[in-house]
Image (cartoon, rainbow, N blue to C red):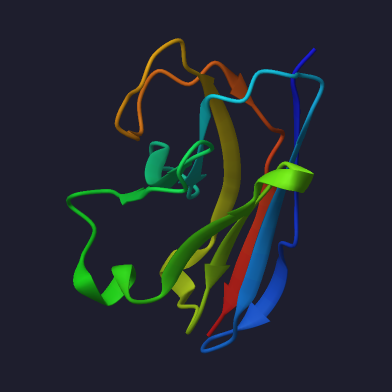
Length: 129
């Protein structure tokens, strides 16, 4: 059974950095995407970024402001089935529960932020002003 476990969240001051980790396990297929999402209090969940297992190609949400895009970086270590989300210069508006999710693929596909099959429980990120 596919399992995803996020870690690395916490309480940080404005301007700080965090590296969130997503540990995937319980599967042997090698063609998948892993995405990062977040849900702030009182808001809908939003997609941030995803990465392809086969070629490491990344995608960031099209509507992401440049100010946010410069601060978020997705990366992966496929040998360990780990996906990271580095967040720099954290701002209070980044406060949210951050989730990773996995989408199994049966053909080549561009990375996107829809139709994910498996989800982690989330890790809380709180940014104090």
